[in-house]
Length: 40
Image (cartoon, rainbow, N blue to C red; front, side):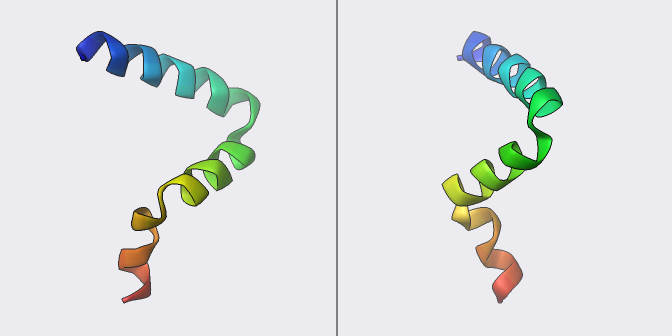
């Protein structure tokens, strides 16, 4: 599980460098629960 987390983190860091804005929109669309608390 830890290795998976490290691989995922490395992937996201590399992905962020290339597509910061698109990555942010992607995570917001994939994880709406990160936005919901801001609505209430």
